[in-house]
Image (cartoon, rainbow, N blue to C red; front, side, top):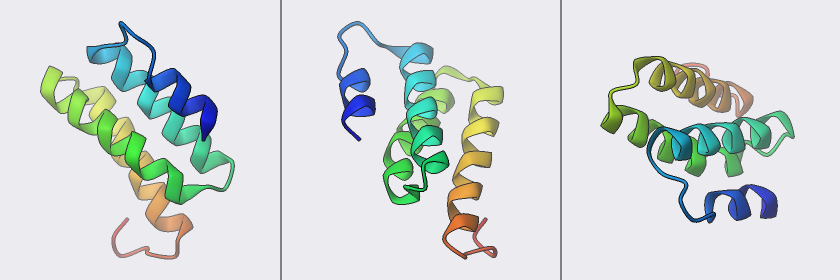
Length: 78
C-alpha cells in the first residue's frame, strides 16, 4: 500500500487527476489480490468523479467496486 499512499499524498494532485490516481491505485490493489485495500481509494475516486461530473470515470470505479464485491464472494452486492 505504500506506493499508492505515496502517490495520493503528492502535492498538486487534484480533481480529475487525483481521481484517476486513486482509481488506478484501487485497481492495482484489486489486481494484486488485496481487495480490502482497494476500497478506500476507489471510494475516493468515485466521490471526486461525481463531484467533477465525469460519468465515464464514475462508471469505471463502480465496475471496480463491483469486482471487489465479487472477489469477496458477495455477488448480490456487486
